[in-house]
Length: 142
Image: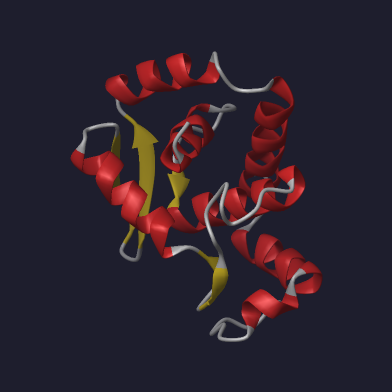
């Protein structure tokens, strides 16, 4: 299973199928921590402008977009939403068949945590739990 497969699964889970790049980033970070995955097994996160970030996630999102697995669209002048295409939904079905149910539950839990809250609430939560990922952050917590 490739790392980018987790982005496909993430977008397929739950009732909310559109996510911003920051929601995707935070969900994948929380999932990595909850699943106790190493940098060799999963994305490597570093401190960045809004907390934990992996440039590889952005690269994989672009690759999935180029492969017509995801599409993006403007949600506001500064924010884009990402969703699966029909091809992506089919891939998610196929990928999910080979994933350990406890990993799927952790991924779903991470997505639910992030998408059920305002992004600044998630930011503040992550800042309180993982301050080392906010060394270069530009946003102030509320």
